[in-house]
Length: 470
Ligand code: SAM
Image (cartoon, rainbow, N blue to C red; front, side):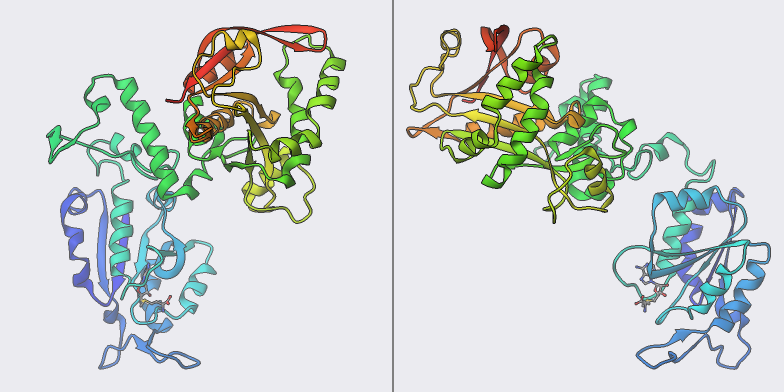
């Protein structure tokens, strides 16, 4: 690959003789030349700049001088890279494209107030030249040389043969799916009281890989949440989805990427939307074969807006909602999955209720759970009931269930009844719904016994599960 750097400070680029880049040059893997811009000047003072047109502080680098320097270097076309704080952020994807591109890469290092804008405009007009105005970050340096060093090093290390083990290029921040790398460690295993996480020294490679992936997603969520918004949903594993849900991101059915989700206490304004969500999702929770009229009767009696409003107002109910999207709607219409995708695009900022949980606190610390079969197996007091966990259809399997469950557990664990902390959270779930049972088990619930639950004439066999909160 051919690279040319043009600058008024050629000595600044001396580090390109060092380390892996220097070795790549000596090995002939890259043909790199540094040029002094002043060599093309013809006046006695070797002038490269002049005062800004329109006035203002500082000096601007002249287009005619840059044209003289760049024309021969771009005679066969190529890429003209111009460092500029006003340029597009330099990314790994850009470096990848430069490392695999044809033609020379020419870097034009500005100084002062930068290079006359007509230089970029002129070369952009040529079919055989790609102009890349790129920024190292949202700050200002004195000149483009540091940015040239960064670009050249970033591109050259991607050329075949430069980095000894190509695997190390794949397992890095911004490589692959674009997430940040997990934290790395080496010997000694204990240093200043700090230990290497034991999973990494356990010899269990599967567990180590899972640990790394989780840390990578956690780090990305904490430091660069914008990168999570660009993840390819199709490439996310179930474990990824669970981790992302814990980090406040879910993948709606059919959506290209994860979207932010928040869990909050329901307010009076949520009653209507909650009733609609409950009516739409209740059937999903019923065992196959449940009569439609039984479902309708149950919805009409128990899942109305009035009921929801009563729960929201009740001091013994904890009603939490999962809200997907970024802000309150102007008109409040439309709650389909389409609006979620719109929110992810930034096209509409309309939040949508994607699920909810309803937990009942007991009326007194020693209150016995209302059904005999439950009271027989739920021993701890005070004991709260996780009465409902509903997830909208588009969010089934998205990881939202776990997020809501963890939130309900956390809210209950910090609640008190008659001044006593709640010690257990119990729920009943269909005995044959193994998926639900598994999900509850992963959130720390254990099966303690059977229970019968009635919808209309039909009696369902449930199991009672308990989460210890002590
Ligand atoms: N007046 C310019 C502006 O406000 O956008 C800043 C000029 S800066 C002082 C001089 C030169 O430093 C720029 O032409 C560019 O080559 C380089 N430079 C400064 N900050 C940079 C950054 N964040 N990324 C890339 N290059 C930068």
